[in-house]
Length: 101
Image 1: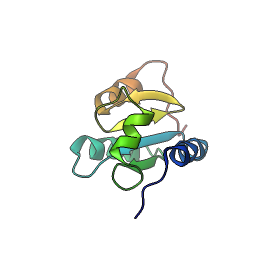
Image 2 (image 1 turned 90 degrees about the vertical axis):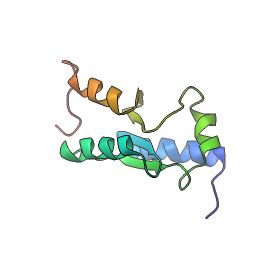
Image 3 (image 1 turned 30 degrees about the vertical axis):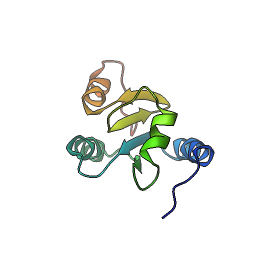
Image 4 (image 1 turned 30 degrees about the horizontal axis):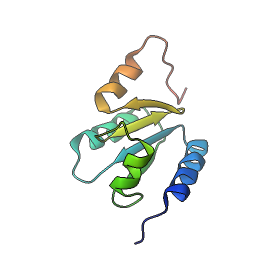
């Protein structure tokens, strides 16, 4: 499988954001990635998963998000939420409405 170019990846990410309000960047053997996906599944939230090593290279990920060093990395409605702990905080905010509602 060939990796996509950075420009193609950025375009693909924009298209995926239009299709799904949630994007999770993950990798294999990542327990917090699994927890994040389970979190959304329990809330009946649809998400798009972008897997490092399959959908994009680690280098491409770091080019797009130079400040991010870990996965999962979660984006909701275009807002960079962060990892699993930040996801839980995001959903516990009093002003946060669940996306599925």
